Length: 147
Image 1 (cartoon, rainbow, N blue to C red):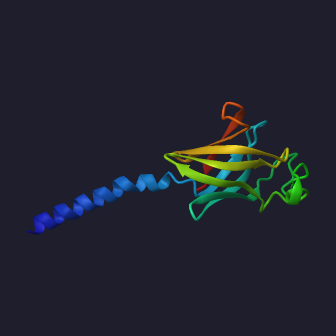
Image 2 (cartoon, one colour):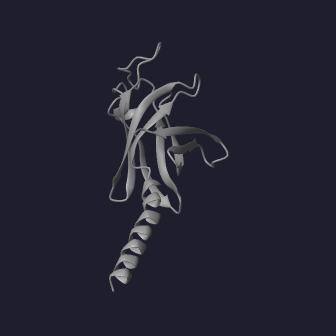
Image 3 (cartoon, rainbow, N blue to C red):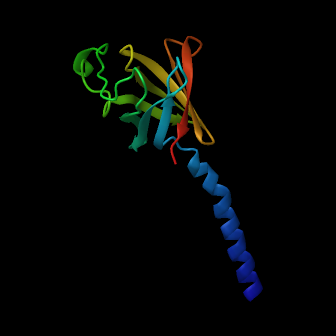
């Protein structure tokens, strides 16, 4: 009887171990972004789930020459114009669709433009694609999960 209980407990632990990686495929967490031009780390963005809808906020601009850590979104329009990039929501409305997330938008604080967005978690990286109209017309970035 003890062997059956031990076997059952081992099977349950194995089942939990197999489901753990799926939980890690969530984009919720803090991600390091990189500059398109020089490839250097640019900022930290925290993605949260609010009722199943994802939202990303800049939590820190990383110091590097020629890029102020207190940058403002001077190219933005509306309420964002001239506001600090740190603390700004730059990703919103993302919903899970299978193993991808889409249906939302992303703001590029450098040019103030808002793009449609889709993203996919691949291990400890997040492939983020901003585009106009169809995904073919856009650009992708790879963000890295912070420990």
